[in-house]
Amino acid sequence: MTISFRIFLTIIAFASFYFVIKNIRKSKLLISDCIFWFFFSLIVVLLAIFPGIAIFFADLMGIQSPVNLMYLILIGLLLYLTFKQTIRISELETKITNIVQDITIERKDKK
Amino acid sequence: MKILIIIPAYNEEGNIERVVKNLIDNYPQFDYVVVNDGSHDHTTEICRKNNFNLLDQPQNLGLAGAFQTGMRYALKCGYDAAVQFDGDGQHRPEFIQAMADQISAGADIVIASRFVTEKKPKTLRMAGSNILENSIKLTTGKNVSDPTSGMRMYSKKIIKILATNINMGPEPDTLAYFIRCGADVRETQVKMDERIAGESYLNLSRSISYMLTMCVSILLVGCFRKKIEL
Image (tube, rainbow over all chains, first blue to last red; front, side, top):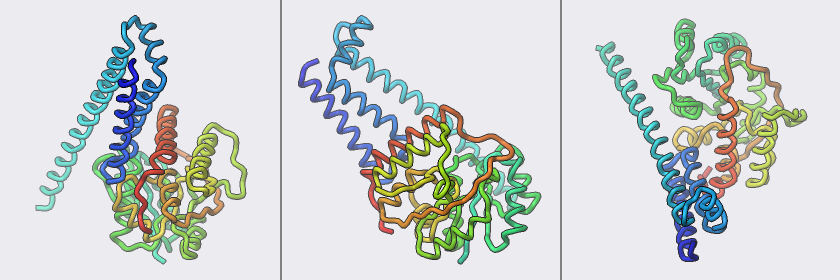
C-alpha cells in the first residue's frame, strides 16, 4: 500500500468518526446505533497504520494486492450493515403497521 | 413532596401483582405507575383486573422507551421526584423514603446502591460492574459504587431532561453524562432481593453487547457529548 493511500484511509476514518459525533451532539443519532461506525473507523485506521495486517491476510487468502483485500473488507462491512438495516426496516414496518391498526381499532370503539 | 414510582414491566405476570399490591397496601404515600412495555403474557390483564394505574404501550420499546414513557407521565403530572423500580420484586420500597430525603436535601440523582458500605462480591456480573465503575471514575472523577443498580431516583429538573431528550436511557452512561454536566449524584445503601419469578433479560451475548455499548458510550462518546444546562 502506498503512503498516499494510507493517508487517504486515515482521513476517511477520522471524517466518519467526526460525522458520527457531530450527529450525536445534534441529538440525531442513538449512541447504541453508532458502535458499528466506531468499529469501522477503528478498523480502517488500524489497516492504515499497520499495513502489515493487510499484507499478511492478503498472502494468507491468496489475494495479489493488499489494496484489494482492503476493498474486500470494506465491501464486507457494508454488506453486513445493509443486511442489518434491512432487518431493522422490516421490524419498524411491522411495528408501524401494528400501531396504526391499534389506533384504528381504538378509534372505532370511541364512536 | 410528590413522588412517583415508575415500574416498567415486560412479561412480568409472575411478579407484577405482588409488587404493586405491596406498594398500594404498605406505601400509600407514594404514587405509582406501571408502564407495560408491550408484554405478550398476561401482564396487561392482571393490571386491568386489579385496576392498577397503568400506561399500556401497544408495542415493545425496550427498557429505555418504557422508562421514558414513565418520565413523560411524571413531567406531565408535575411530580417532584420519580424513582425507577423493577417490576420483578428485587427492589424494596422501604428505601424510597431515604432516597427522597436526599432529593429534598438537594441531590439531583440518588442511586440505591448495594455497595456503599457492603463489599462487592467477586462474580462475573460484578466484574462488569467494576469495569463500569472504573470507566465512570476515569471520565468524571466520581466514585459510583453500584452503577448498574436499576433503582434510581431523579429530581424534578432531571425528570424534564430525561423526558424530552434522546440518548437518556436508564443506564450507567446517562449517570456519567449527568455527573459531567455537574449534577449532584448521591448513593444510599440498600438491600436488594433476587427476582422470584420469570427470566432475566440479560444472557451472555446481550451482556457482552451491553458492556461494549456502555464502555464506548462512557469512555468515548461521553467526552464529546454536548453538556446540558442543569
